Length: 345
Image (tube, rainbow, N blue to C red; front, side, top):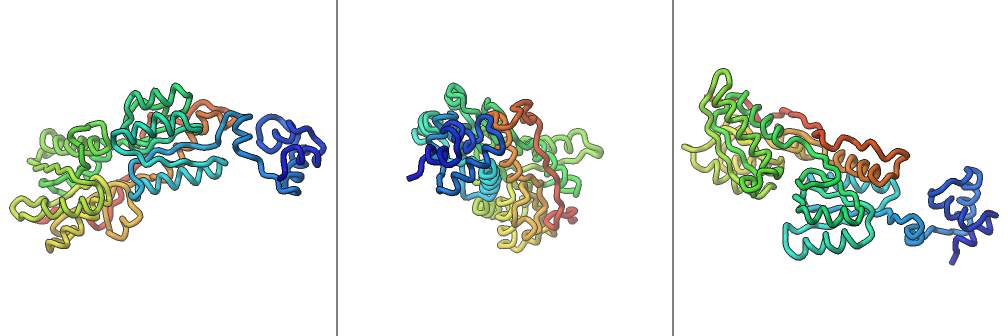
């Protein structure tokens, strides 16, 4: 088994110089570094990550906390994170976080706080104060994508504005009986993604009813359902099943929920958009296939940016500050396709 001393002897340098040359930490002349790299390749030496960790205090590993692994949005964010970490020479440890209970406590109290990760990226999780403080006491930077809680840095879209934009699009098309299919817990947790999108929906409806020119009497319906196609399908069947109370438009809080609504409409013999306009959020990879109007965001880019922020907080770049502005909302845009149209008489 080869060791760093074998590399040093072959390259004609000290063990400390060989270690610096291979780890990238500390100054080594370029000519010397290349000689060490060639020597390591010649004898098949691979630096031990554990040994490097003892020298640098870094594990080159980032913990990623995620509430779901079987959703397109979370999969896209995770792919962006993983690809960027690999490019930076970092590994990833994934934690599928329960909503509450002892299993969640173990993730924060033991796996993240005590195991060896350099930083933590949290995706769409509402963090408790104690969870944040436990990590910060151990000097582990926290970067959040969405969610809530006082973390070191947060990247998110403006979910309230997203809800308003989606609803205003339907109002602009003349719809006055509009339903919003939001996520479970939207009413009980106004700071959550589901709560903020529902709040934007209500604000747009209120503006149209109270102060718009001309003012309109808008009937708004809010239903909470599981986010995803099955939740959208089941809620859609209940919502659209009674002709006397059927809305002419639906704003679904995610594209996958919107897909379910479209399938429910088809089951009931309703045409989209002739009988029902539908808009979602995300710009899912299948949104164009469903011809779905949506508010687009870029989850893979959010993952990339989260890694960039985490590495800057760790000081891996030449200049650790200033950080990217984690307070500014990330970009979204309305993409109009064939699932929305002007209301028919």
